[in-house]
Length: 383
Ligand SMILES: [Fe+2]
Image (tube, rainbow, N blue to C red; front, side, top):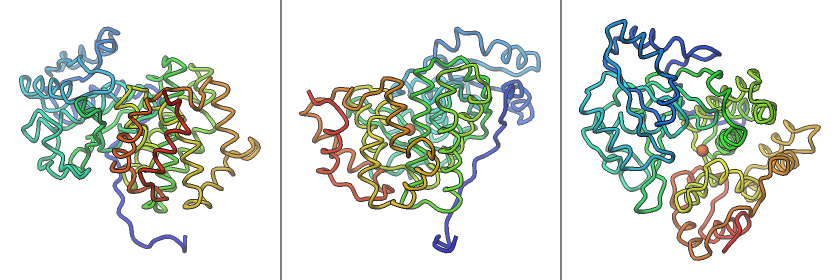
């Protein structure tokens, strides 16, 4: 510990109920907090699945008024968040409950803070320099119920919202947006298809690695990041191959949370700065874009994070080192570097945006536009 800084700030998440079956505690939690008017924020598919029916019935029996906003879209954008804010305004809830993957949770979180701050648009909360200092009022209480294991958004105050006009992924976040609580029930991830499990799992792995290598990482964040890396390397394959394996699902749900706490405190890095541009331009799944960038960015970052990258190799002991482990994983699951196309004419503008992205500030090696262009060329098929 001697080489560590003696000072750091650290935000720990609000209450977390973790464990198989914890979803059953949701009505009780709402009633205990006196949340009598509640909006559930979900995708249309989740609403149709009937998953909320039992919860809504219990709340109705107890005299609460609960309703469902079911217009969450994949990669939520400014318009879909504004739609949710208007829904909240019409209902005047005491709390929102996001149930789903990162898209549902981020919609709930972004809409809740817009609602409290009297605006329909996330853009009104941003400063234009990557900060969200225009958030003046604490968010309407938001309860997070993740059904994937990857985004980490259930335990941190960030939401990623697409600005379609600018082909941009906006990171909006401030302590005032911290979720009221998270109910993390790994059983909810049992039915996730293998590809979603893989992509979301790699997203969690990327959060863990980028926060671990972050320029502002500290002793406490390293514990969270390294714990997540160890859990993911031990369980990702099993969760993908055998989705019904509850132990693997529990480990992945834990890892998502640990990495989510670490990234809130010490930021991410170049992979996210670059992958947000790819997804903003081409709608590439976030985890896939991260996966393709991971090996090359790790090689780029090695000079600034030699010891920590060595420790990744130690976790992969017996598997030939971390890069070998990644290469084998990608081969097995048909993830090919250069397997996704991007247009040559877009590279420059994506690189300029990536160099200006908030995540780049904590990358262990300074990355300029030319470095970033080169990495795009190495990781994607240019057409
Ligand atoms: Fe991510």
